[in-house]
Length: 292
Ligand SMILES: NC(=O)c1ccc[n+]([C@@H]2O[C@H](COP(=O)([O-])OP(=O)(O)OC[C@H]3O[C@@H](n4cnc5c(N)ncnc54)[C@H](OP(=O)(O)O)[C@@H]3O)[C@@H](O)[C@H]2O)c1
Image (cartoon, rainbow, N blue to C red; front, side, top):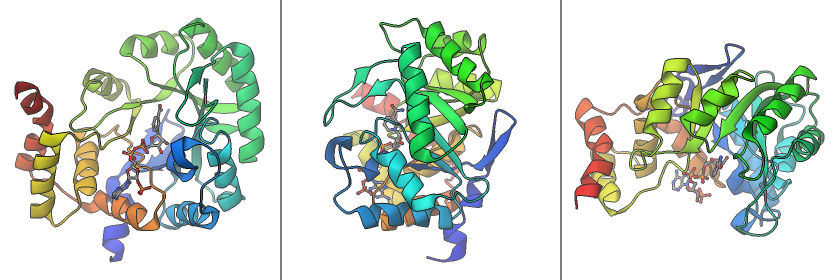
């Protein structure tokens, strides 16, 4: 793989809240933990190696959460990368806990969020978290109360920028009345378009959109993807990432992997340019699947 293929700068840059600029292709650090996003990785050296290689290849946006492991993903990031290179942005989250393998429980109470931010600061060895995301609204807690807590933590200097995850447009609008919101992280991909209207809203308002699980490919999606991948001499993952990068200038994909080989392939997607026809075909997959 040559340097051009590796160059992440080809993805372009995106500004977070007009304060921090990052490349528009980041790294999701959830998959570095053990099976079921639980416990340590089976091969710690390999997990640390993926993080170091990501930064070596110029990735400057890493997504994580206190619940990945729990704590494991944040600890690995600090172990691999501290002291952090200038310009590296770590975006973590809180408010959704991991009590066991593949299990989630809500807690976005003000008291918990305060404890969660303190815990992330300690594990990441930071004085201030660049981007802190409410992992998901807690149905048992006032959404405003959760966001106000993050706004207070921002005023106290513990968080630089506030962000949301797993939200509707209405949530974003309500949150923006309390504090500027710099990014929204929802499940999204070319064949998984439920949040299209949130992407459009983010684009209109200069908010970054961070798609998670961009490869939600069903049978129809797989057929179209494989055919385009073959024509482009690329992998299906690269095609799915290239579609995201083209979908909107506010898109900031964070493909996750536990392998250096996959990481390098994902970064190379920054140099892949889909034709208009290929972009249209991929964009039409969800409608095509629905009609079958
Ligand atoms: N906000 C939320 O609620 C939420 C939820 C889920 C995830 N996230 C974030 O989003 C990030 C990405 O989501 P995700 O990990 O669920 O989905 P993803 O990035 O779409 O997919 C990850 C899976 O794809 C595989 N993969 C990655 N690159 C590949 C390649 N080049 N070729 C073949 N397989 C490849 C990985 O396996 P290998 O390890 O074998 O490469 C892994 O099993 C996470 O790391 C996390 O930071 C957020």
